[in-house]
Image 1 (cartoon, rainbow, N blue to C red):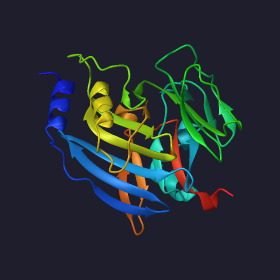
Image 2 (tube, helix red, strand yellow):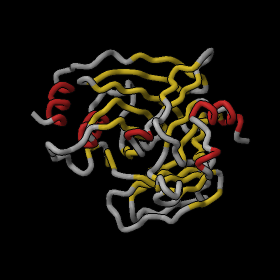
Image 3 (cartoon, rainbow, N blue to C red):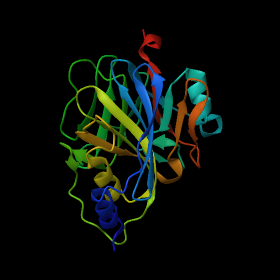
Image 4 (cartoon, one colour):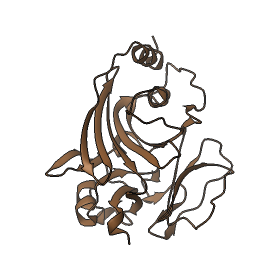
Length: 251
């Protein structure tokens, strides 16, 4: 039986470990669960209390690990970001890290997603949607879409050849609450179905979700109140990523 079909059946049958939750302070929570054999590590946060910043390793030889980045920037959470050219170590799309732009905006692709952030708002945009209000100070492009309007996008069509890999994702309810996370190996269609399942994150109903670079690039570092709650480092040096910092550190 196909992996995505098995995953969906198990999820509908309630084959899920209870969600373990730990407060990180400032309205952020660290969560772990397992659904149909897929382990998921996530951080749920409020954009009014925690600010997303895009970070960039401009040189491969000087690239910081997620843990090094988190400690240097006094971050709560650090994860990997978008696709990049491993040879040139340049982003595959537009990257804006603390106002510095690198790369070129990818357009004309219905699967492309753009995470855009200012100090007062954050959105996941699809091709054709335009940035509104202030100019984005933080921006990442990647693909494909995982959820649109709370539903899998594109509608999942199981493919027996679809590969499984570690995944990184970010999603929002478009009301100021976000979840970013990583998973153990799963197909993209399986991940989309998993994120669409009601109750994956208690009290959170996702509307939009985007896939980030996965496989050997997947990584998540989480600072706990007393020690590290997660320190899953990528298997390779990555070009960029997302980190959460306390709003108090922004102003």
